[in-house]
Image 1 (cartoon, one colour):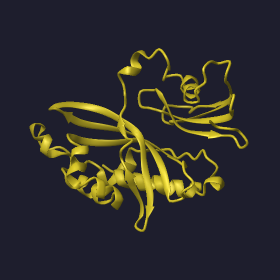
Image 2 (cartoon, helix red, strand yellow; image 1 turned 90 degrees about the horizontal axis):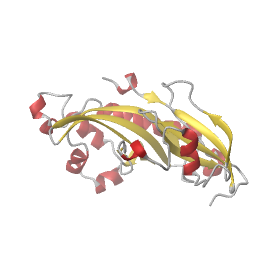
Image 3 (cartoon, one colour; image 1 turned 90 degrees about the vertical axis):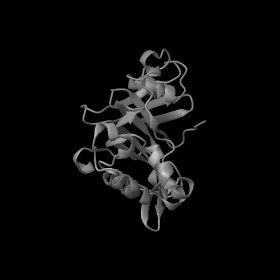
Length: 240
């Protein structure tokens, strides 16, 4: 199954391209490289730890190919066996969404927020788990390559069930928490743009804070909860 058949592609660029030395084309190219990598991964599976379930997916081959497409610097710190351990028990990977974010003055580096759905065996028990976080993507002589997987971690679906501090299902609460607004009196929402339907995932809230005007980019996760993916301070504002 091709990744293009099931990937929801959402590319966002919040920060000022001219100020940071990278433009939307750069971000889009980096995001396309991420999609290509997941397409290579495809239906790759850790068959060694799925034997009791019979033949699943396309086996270890796609995983090996995906490892070969990582940036050389990442391969120096993570050998192939460690990469396979990283995806231990994987039966199928589904990429749910991507958002490219300009986060550095280095035009050869882009962060891409991803949300994954992994069907896998955890200690022999079939399960579906969701992962999210930022991939680091670096421009190399061979094109854009993933240079870090460290930030992509399992979504915390337990502690958020009864979180008295932040209501993750309310994008305003999530944005205010990201900006460390102590109370509604400290900050006020100037503009709220949320996706019109469940097929779209990206929202933006512009908020007046004591430090200036900020726009928070939010991604809506598979379970309807929101997570911040970027913050842009308006030109002339002071960010602490």
